Image 1 (cartoon, rainbow, N blue to C red):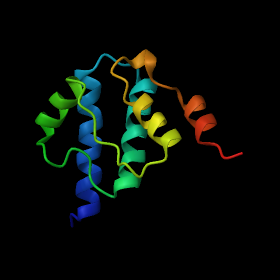
Image 2 (image 1 turned 180 degrees about the vertical axis):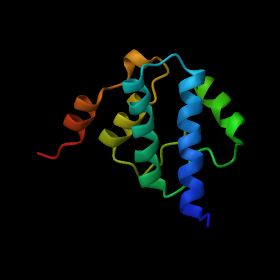
Image 3 (image 1 turned 90 degrees about the vertical axis):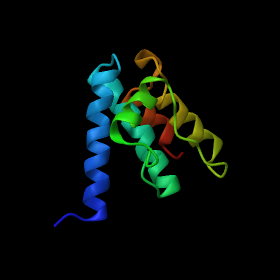
Length: 105
């Protein structure tokens, strides 16, 4: 039986695979895009691009539209999220860099 949780997962999974189709990315840098979205979801407790249909969300991503980072987000975390959403894949951090930047001393 479908649940809100499974619907959000299904939408997120579909959105991710659509982003692979519309953006010229390697898989590793596509996954860093997804890390940024997951961090945003953890902060906001909202589903991403919920105001759009799946195709509208894919177009918004292709056009470089990003989710609004909440004002209460700590600046270092906001910088990671923004970097993960860089339009050019080569400008996105890889997992090693994301890990290093998230690591607490």
